[in-house]
Length: 380
Ligand SMILES: [Zn+2]
Ligand SMILES: [Zn+2]
Image 1 (cartoon, rainbow, N blue to C red):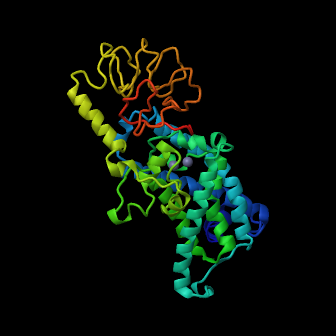
Image 2: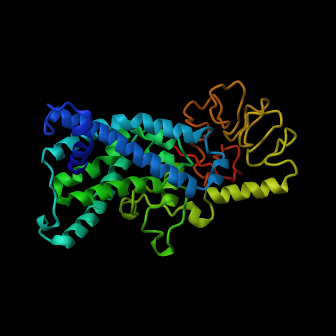
Image 3: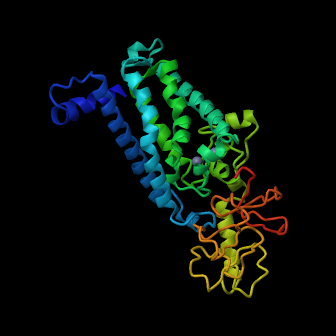
């Protein structure tokens, strides 16, 4: 980070911003500069790559998925933008220690005992170390002591967009980035390589939320891609990893992505479309269709249903937890569980007694036939 600070000082801060008498090496000035640079840099990376990914990679079809929340994109962005300054506070403390010379970062390739091969090896070791660190920290954040308070906000997004990538509670966001910051204090690392890796990890984080589930066939069970991470958002207890599936396999939490097996969010949407095409009045049909076997009911009298999945006023008791009621003003996304289920964070909730909801819209015991896709988890 001192490379960035030096460049900012030389080209902008010293000539145009700070008073002439404030020396570049003064700690308060360094802290202030680092705070501004870190925030602007993180925001720029997030918004630039998030936007590119959202418009060029993210499949906007996914926004029709019933677990996609109303105004989700703006909510993801607002949450991330609110959290980033808080995440930056402890991050800046570590950058400051780095600038003051406490890390093992070095300037020139010649400073590495192994030359270019040392730089290459350090990149591999950085990826291995941070993958391992994030796995265990992420898994720890799923412990009942921490989950609700710190990590649950990130799991609000079941069908994430690239903008969910940085939408974390500040404690969660900092903890999961900690391995990146600790590494250069423990191991030698070339400064420019570190900057490159820092940009890479931010882009990777965006990529595993981009809804593009493709992974080269040979690497499908090696690389932790968007397909794997989507299942983490949907089913909680699997695929905690970041780049590789290695630690999930070691830790017993690996799950082959549902989208590789024809049961992912896209497959669910395809089935919905097929059902929609088969039914004369669209998904779930009308009030006169009390038997909608998958609990997806729409009513023409329910103008608020944004995705066609909504129970009518007269259907407060939709037995699969996807019932909406006008008496339930807190329903934020047209999909709501009953009042008896206060823990439902996004209105989609299944009964704990229904461990078998394999694919999506969790069903209660009374609706064992739900076969359509919104997963439930006792973790929620
Ligand atoms: Zn995520
Ligand atoms: Zn998680």
